[in-house]
Image (cartoon, rainbow, N blue to C red; front, side):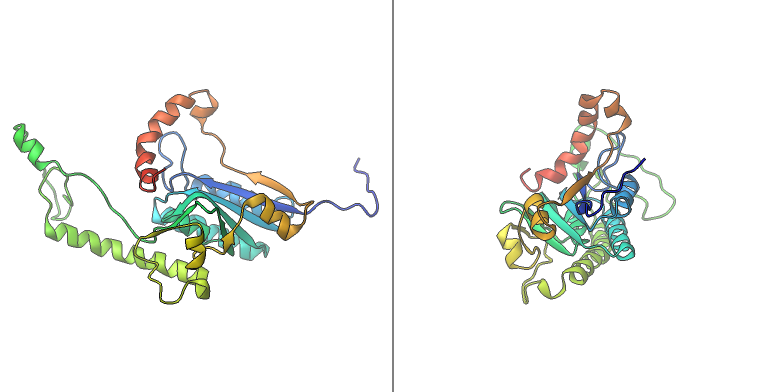
Length: 267
């Protein structure tokens, strides 16, 4: 039986969502961030326990633009439905798709050494045509459709393939730019070219309007909602392999996929 004590109220609650990892990197062991893997925890964070606000802890070098858009759209949809403010706190990096996620918040707080930005689109790979030729290996490709063998790494790069890739990247870049402008608006530094893919550190990001200030989640949430605020953490559940004690195997299987994303920022 619940006992009601007059004049005693529950402390205010703020839901904290941790968004860590490469976006779209779910792969075989369930690591990484995707709309499917984060949907339930985001829903819980907004709807469970009547929170006063939601805080996003973002630590991501980016990844899939589509998954970035879907996750951010879910956050905004729930923020509007529940009429809750959303605050983002950047840890090591919120770059590319990671910054897209941070922009889902109403304000963005960063550490002095955090890396933010990288508002652009990248495609990278390797080419091996000379290696094959040198070792007497013949590449055989048969397609139905002239564009099916697109940017084949085992054939010399074709200018028309590069032009086609750039044509694919441009609308994605424009969608990213539109998202940042819509969410950051007049806070973006006037005249600054922020959409070249450049990254900014801490106070640099604040100066150009990509972030609102230097701040960490616990002191900032207490400053906004009082010292008695209760912060409830919501984060992704461990994959089946990790729960079964295959932590080392899970890390090995995802390390190669994720390493390239983090390495671009020296992490």
